Length: 319
Ligand code: SAH
Image 1 (tube, rainbow, N blue to C red):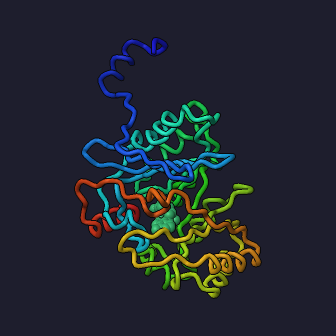
Image 2 (image 1 turned 180 degrees about the vertical axis):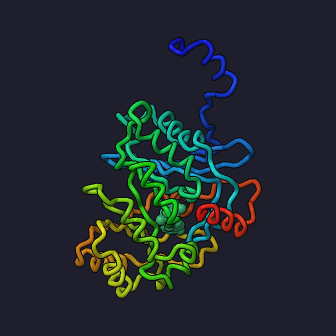
Image 3 (image 1 turned 135 degrees about the vertical axis):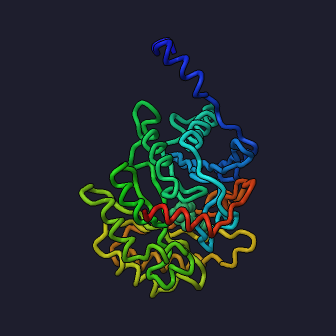
């Protein structure tokens, strides 16, 4: 890089390195979905999933090794939390995928990025925001800010900060229409109940025309999938520019939940659509390679005590 000064080049050689992440596993599903296990310094590994569709290619990336939250239907939760990913490790997943897919017959293999892999992105705020801003920077990957989506369980104070720091799309893992039910499946709701969460989400899109919040709703048989839940949800979101994405539950060993039937999901969607909400059902992709939502496990060398870490992380958010 001769356009940089000698002094800067010498400094960079000292403090920085350019190193592509290494895949230790590479699996391909019958539906074309790819899943890579990328090794990290320190012996950990994370999973990154690529989902090709006719008009786009979505990369689902991780933000942490493991996860400190304890969502009852998520297999990443079961392995506990180890550490945050660095900016390099987050953007490195995009770099890796673009390189790995270079010989595919696609102009731009990665058009969309979703922070829906392992971890809670808002509990690794600074690194996630820096990496997301690189993805949308024209000097870097130049993705549309509407095509980079952060998915969160709802860390309320961080949502307010996010509105100041970036303009990417927001998906929120709601999964229940009331606190009583949400607390049971997303324990973070005890810290940040729905009445605090919704104003923070409204604030995120305030003043941004045509922006909507995507509400994610995992369909758990007999738990949150009744007609009444759909009606309650429709009422709850009244007045918020919304899209609702129903996710058929993806099972994993020891999960203790079942996926709602297709008919149930369809009925649930119809109720929401009749109430005026754009409602889609996520097609399950890559489940033959355990690459579907909530199935990413990676490899955690030393599992931290989850409860303690959650307390510390959420406490740090409060202050
Ligand atoms: N921590 C972030 C990102 C998590 S993964 C968040 O909570 O949003 C992205 C989505 O997959 C979330 O909506 C999450 O609730 C959902 N998910 C987790 N486990 C799942 C499973 N077993 N089946 C279907 N969806 C699941």
